[in-house]
Amino acid sequence: MCYLYNAIKYLFLFICFIICFGCNDDSPDEMLSKAINLVNQNKYKEAISQLDLLIEKHPDFAPAYLHKGTYLAVSTNNFAEVMKNLNKAIDLQPNYTEGYYYRGIQKDIYYPLYGSAIPDLNKAIDLNPKYSDAYLARGSAKNSQKQYAEALLDIEKAKSLKNNFPDLYCERALSLLGLKRIQEGLDNITIALSIDSLNHVAYYLRCLAYFELKDNRTSCANCEQAAKYGNSDAKQFFIEKCK
Image (tube, rainbow, N blue to C red; front, side, top):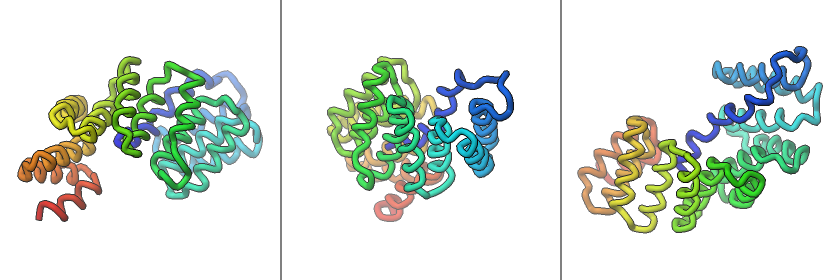
């Protein structure tokens, strides 16, 4: 699941090629560009309002619904509305690779409420077999469902496609811990922390690994660090196991 903490923020990379800076202010691409600029300033409410205007003027523009769904996912707890917009994007554009990818991520977050994320991520990969983020997201979804050996295969595929985010090493560590390959899991956690020393998920996974090794002192120290950086699961673990 650690992949999910960062996935949404990378949405803005794939749309850059569609932005038409020479278009008039009412073109869908220009209106979408304005919404993206607002999000880059953390103005999600204003960005969603901009997308509502875009949808009113261009109701068949699938990227508007995709972005609205992902912005709602970041800024609200209204999962039904998130899914409504992502579903609409795919309805309008049935081969929308990013639509399946982001809908899969949201399904994974709320699994099993809306079913498995894996079919959507399978579709994204079918449409783009070199989509490294989709392989990593599918690995995360399989980890969520305790399919650790299959998850590890997807994570290795993502790595082969040059995905080197700390999330990859967190997900690989989670798979390895699930397979009881504890030392290999710890090695991947160390790599994740070498890339991002504030990665609360990595600290929490290291907490779990040392707990499995019955080193409670080291486990609790890492759990406390993870909680310090905002990991709610680590905070609860610390209360239950370390006090």
